[in-house]
Length: 162
Image (cartoon, rainbow, N blue to C red; front, top):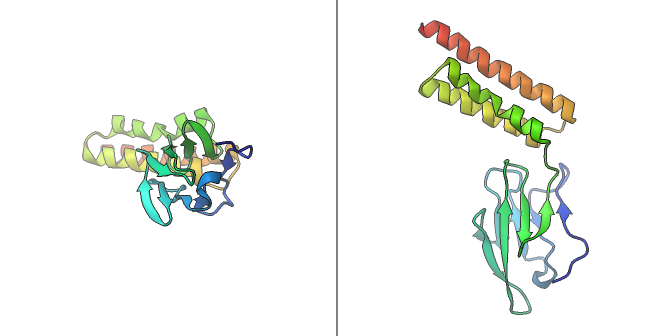
């Protein structure tokens, strides 16, 4: 299998379903819902795999292994037999670390309510990091806003409970 055009890069303007560049498979292999939490691999419209991977049969009779790697929702990479064939611009590591900081609201407010606030903050911040059509600096400011909101809610609820 040789394809000089690898990998295809998904951008904000790309459709949610992408035809994967596998010459021996034609246009039948697609990556669907790649911006979401559960990207899927489909062949001829049938779901054949997700992050755990999928084996597909090529037109020459060989089989190939497709694997989706996604650290953050909305930023997957697809590997065909270990070779990257689809990718998205990956956010800077410091922005990903910043997006995890709402989890510290658990320090102020423990228990189920603190967990809900922490998870909500982390999910909101990761959505801003991977999906917001903003520059990196504006995404960082938006994530800081999510952090401040999560901590404010946690501290307010903690002071009401005390």
